[in-house]
Amino acid sequence: MNVNELIAATGAEFFTGVPDSQLKQLCDALYERYGIGKEHIIAANEGNAVGLAAGYHLATGKVPVVYMQNSGLGNIVNPVASLLNNKVYGIPCIFIVGWRGEPGVHDEPQHIYQGEITLSQLDLLGIKHFVLTKESTATELQSAMDAFQPLLAAGESVAIVVKKGALTKDAPVTYKNGYEMTRERAIEIISDIAGDGVIVSTTGKASRELFEIREGRKQGHGQDFLTVGSMGHASSIALSIALNKPEKKVWCVDGDGAALMHMGAMGVIGANQPTNLVHIVLNNEAHETVGGMPTVSKHLHLVAIAKGCGYENASHVDNEDQLTFALLAAKDAKLLTFLEVRCALGARDDLGRPTTTPKENKAAFMEYLCRN
Image 1: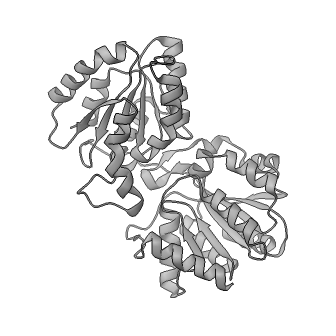
Image 2: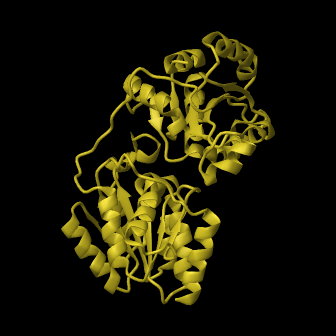
Image 3: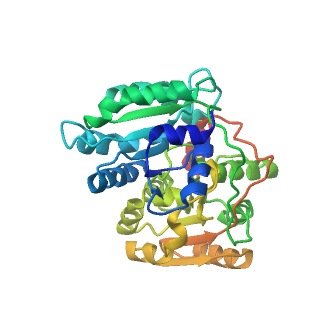
């Protein structure tokens, strides 16, 4: 189905959400049509999107759309159950959910269980849903939306669950920024200077690149915890490791989208003051792993935020020499450190995925921490 038919079927005038690779055609079409502004807001996380949707309905009386990957369903449970629900305010919303990890369709480990429980989660939240497939027609979708209208009018929420390959678009959108240093090169430098320290890397291409760098050097993977799911939580994992292994330098390789998603973690890190933690945010101003749509990090002063959260040492870099100097200083310092690394969008076309399982990664990482 062409993505414009999906947009038309919703009848909506306001869209918000968190980008998803399975919904790239939708994200691109919304960006082309509205850009980023009053009609289309890219949220920090899916719960944030539900709050925006609620405010839109309160202000206009119209029905909003919230889009997300199914991994984001966990982030909407609270606002759906305690804000939108008909036993509370009865605020209607149309959810468009990319179905990663659909049973019977190959996907990455972090999506498997989430895919198995996606429809059950919607059922548990009382959200009626229509599953959009490659074979679905515009007429079938419109019939489903017509059937949803009484529910929306009564303050209920509904969902369109999008299977892999269900949406098409005439041409993709290309996103870019003005930085030159690649993320992979930055991670190479980080892994060099980290030495025998441990690295906790965020979900997405950063962990994939770190894995391939170690493979290329035949170094093994025991020093790295690859956070393949749970976007936004790598820094919290790193904090707890740093507190429990105070003699070990802990390097958190984060992303701007991930850091934004659960930014409150930075306040917790600052309050605990682990002097052996270096929190690095690779900022390409985009949700690159899921298609490249922009984050709001372009408009933020992340270094000032880090300082406000209590990071004793905070700075930014945008080239290899600056990065090397800052990392060497952080390695020697016994200070909680924040480093924003401004880097280009893009990755190698042949970038692979980890060939070890998450459980194998966990076992090797724990063994390394135990031995060292």
